[in-house]
Picture 1 (cartoon, rainbow, N blue to C red):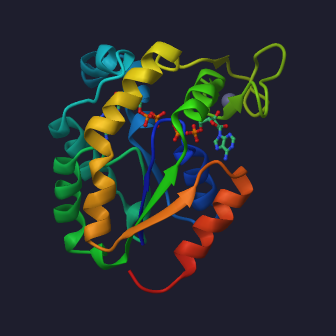
Picture 2: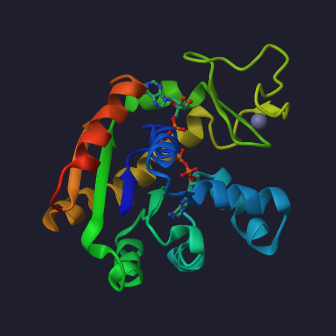
Picture 3: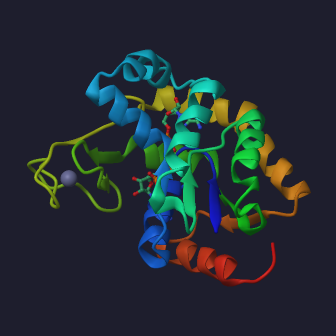
Length: 217
Ligand code: ADP
Ligand code: ADP
Ligand code: ZN
């Protein structure tokens, strides 16, 4: 099964993708995590995308499609995968369709997690993350340890450089201008399911499970 999580920055895509991965044993593919790892490693790709990401803009479709094409060919993706942060534009969605056509396009489910803008700004400006293992913290819901050492791996817990209020507003604008159209796109293809992202993390996950365990498109 191929699962796409759609939603504004901070809607809870990463949080839910990790829960789905644990429960259904299929990998989470977060394009944001892949890009951040490239930036951290100072690779050619990392150097290319660093300032784009810091400005809250989208990386080009060509680059993103290449990354996904390569990633979903890995053996761990054979039984399916969860896309968190991809596709973000119509051309990305069309490219994905071609890539999965030969395999399980019939088992594609797209889940939109919807959350109002004020809540998004609040969540993201309080988000903190371990720079080593990626564990998520949030100053409002589950604060990082006082010494800012990750409780899982001891790494530094930091704020993402694009998680400032100013950049979040730009990312939200990118979402409305380029990504929100995917909701319509998948609705027309009868693939779209919606969940209310204002609920607790557990309740959002239960709603997602109901969708995944339902038969049909
Ligand atoms: P969030 O889910 O919090 O919005 P991500 O971690 O998914 O953030 O993405 C961080 C940044 O990485 C985006 O603002 C964008 O610059 C870049 N990015 C990630 N995925 C894509 C994509 N599919 N297309 C274009 N840019 C992307
Ligand atoms: P995304 O991947 O869509 O950008 P995240 O999963 O990283 O979003 O969530 C953004 C922030 O909001 C994180 O700090 C996370 O802990 C918090 N969060 C996620 N889901 C919920 C929820 N249902 N209720 C409250 N906070 C949440
Ligand atoms: Zn850690």
